Each structure stands twice: as structure tokens, then as C-alpha cells.
Length: 329
Ligand SMILES: [Zn+2]
Ligand SMILES: [Zn+2]
Figure 1: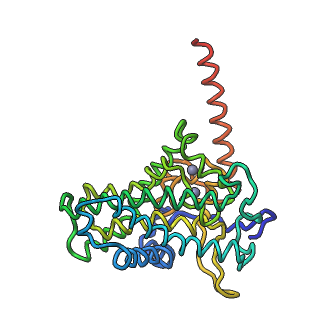
Figure 2: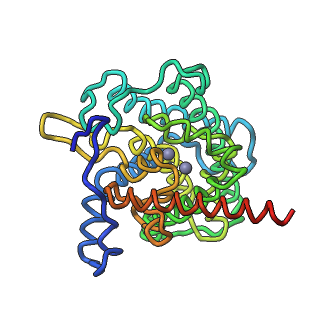
């Protein structure tokens, strides 16, 4: 559907396993054909290149120094410039598919005071490359040191590493939902998360354009492997997945067009609605915690009306509390 403001895909459903009735076989098809292919597999492939080709051997991390963190940061910057910058160039500079499949018909802000340097892309690149890439490098280096000194449990067999790599997607669905909900509470929202939400109309560089305080929370997933057995590759995978996967999901375009009639899944409509309406879709569609906690917006008019009535109810409750507070003092 092409609306006056931009492209609206059809309303979304939760994955087949979580529908009523539950459809486990359809879930398997959904996982392979929609979830893993092509994006999730691309993140695993990219992490394999990052770990085996672009990351120094584990040995040097046993005596951790600033230079080790610096190398990981440089690797992160390089990866982000190529993958995120590539999408930005293709979709937002070259505008190769124009506004086809684009959620918002307008382009990114180039002269707005709310952004650093008055420019949305430069602002987003700064927070992504300096803070995002830097904090991810520190966390990865800490975990590498612990593996190098055999201080934490490590998986041996390849099959176990593969299973745990797949489990990371589910772990992150839980981790992201809860840290994201936390960030929407005062005063954390004002201190940290408001910076990410300056981007209502998002681009690839908006994905992890976050305040350093939010990066510390958002990028903390690898620390799960302080207690759960993991591996150095899985830590790099966490890092790559957290840094890079938000770029297509924030790209602003639902599908990436290759040729006339050939396109593949690009943006994340579910998260796009979060940037549009704030109080819905805190998590990920993979594990629909929003459905279970009553904050799911599937893009339909019905879900929109439900969201508005929730807003009215909480505004009225807020007024009542204010009156009660006033009476008691
Ligand atoms: Zn976002
Ligand atoms: Zn948010």
C-alpha cells in the first residue's frame, strides 16, 4: 500500500508458533525462509569474516591493553563504514529506488538544530562510530581476555557453538525488550534514550545512534556468556549482530529493490512503528513480548485505535494520581 505520507506494508502477524492455534511446522518454515534468510544468515557470515579474518588472535588479549581495544574499534569502524555506509549511499545518496517501499516520503534532515552538526546523518554517524563502535570494542576485549585466561566456561564442539549462535537471536529478543522498556522510564528516557528517538524518520545510520549510556545497556548482551558457556566467536557474533543488524531495520525502506520485480526484506516495519508512536513495539517480532504485555501494534487501524485508548486511559490515570497527590499534601 502506498499512502500519501509513505509506504505502509500490510499489517503484521506474530510468528506462527505464537499464533492461535500454534503452528510449529509453519514456524520452522518462517524461521528458515523469513527469519534466517537472508539477513540473519548474513550477520553470521559477516561475524565469521570479522572473527577469522579481521580480529587479532585470542592470545594477545590475555594481557589486555589499550591497543587491543583500539584494533577492535578500528575493525568495528571499518565494518560499519562498509555495511551501514554502503546502505546509506545506495538508498539515501544515490536514491537507487527513490521512495519506493519507503515508510516516509521525506528524506533525512540536513538542517535541523536538534541534531549534532545540524545534520541527521553526521549526528547519527558520530554516535554510531565513536560511542557504539568504541563501547562494543571494550566489551568484546573484556570477554576475549576472560576466554584467553580460561576464566569463564567455553563451548568446545562446533555443533554446540552453532546452536548457541542461533540462541543469541532469542536471547537478544529478551535482552532488548527489557533494556528498551527500562529506557522508556523517567529519568532514563530523558538522560539516554531520547537521543535515539530524535530520529522519527530513520536511516541506516540511525540504527545504533544512541547515547553512550544506552550503548552500555544495549551492547551488554555478551556478558550473558560470563555464566552461560559461549565462545570467542559467539562474542564477536553478538557484537556484529548488535552493531550492524539495526542498519537495514532503520533504513526507512521496507524492501530493498535489486531489479524491477526483484526485491528482498529490508526495513523492520515493527520497529518503524515504535519510532512513529513511541509506546508500542518495544521488542522484536521474533519473540512477541509486546503481544503478551499489551503493547503490540501490527500496523492496522484496530491496533491504532487500541493504542489511542491506552494513551487516553493512562492520561486519565495520571490526572487522577495528580489529584490524589494534591489532596494528600
Ligand atoms: Zn530504533
Ligand atoms: Zn524506544
